[in-house]
Length: 359
Image (cartoon, rainbow, N blue to C red; front, top):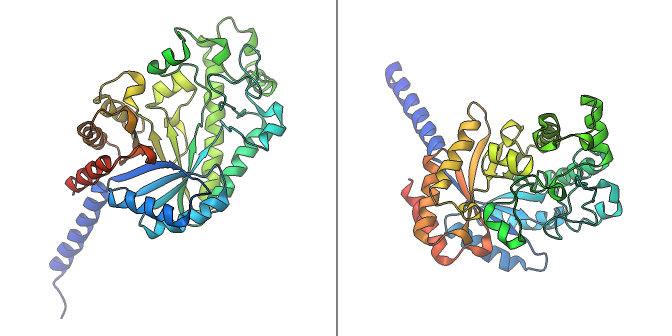
């Protein structure tokens, strides 16, 4: 029996509308977690099941760029119904045994000190230069090895920026610092490769600048150096049919100001802005504000926003729910929590209940 054309049209339209609605209402929940090769498969399966039961859809796993460990964990997480992203510390490479054999690969501060042996703020700040061919190719090579792993959703870049020229305000007392201006010991990168490359384009050496903090060409040179690494990583990830994602600072203008990172100009599939309100002495409503800023700056682009939420900075499960709702209401396509170890049973119940309320 043939159905009337009008009925067929209405049926097709209904199916299409349902699909569009599902596409629009799908809201992801993720969690960052750091792997330990000594941990058993059984313990990992238990951890992944706990996340899944608590409403989590995906895990961003830091294996310290070990593709073998990643290959081991992907099927365990997948079996529990979780999607996996390969989380990599990109330009900041603490303890990188290969990079440490090449002192010239590291960023140099305005006062002439290298991250190789003189690290800003903390000892694990060991930043590689994004301009020098050898150091950037090393990072991109690590990206490629992770991208080759079957079953991952994306290579997830972290520390894809310069060191903090300005720290989040709540962290300043910890280091007994006042940062009312750009301080030379925290201003990077003035290595020979960067200054030569800049001079070739602009016919001036930034070391001779009267005031580098207002030298827009020098600032833009560094923004573009990071963008170039991201854009190359995007090509690599897509070569292996994987996405490229990244953990970034709260919104583009803020990221530009604090860490030379302008993520709204990158070729990237999804960004996970770390909207950690407690770092900036902001109230919970700032999660919505910062999410909306990023969504607005990405208007017209395919890049999605997944809001990062800092669990230790929340005062209650009520705030956790509010943060999730604020992210969704302001245009995020998901939220992710830092980190797995910080999620309590109560947090997971709140996440699962909030997720259910969106259906």
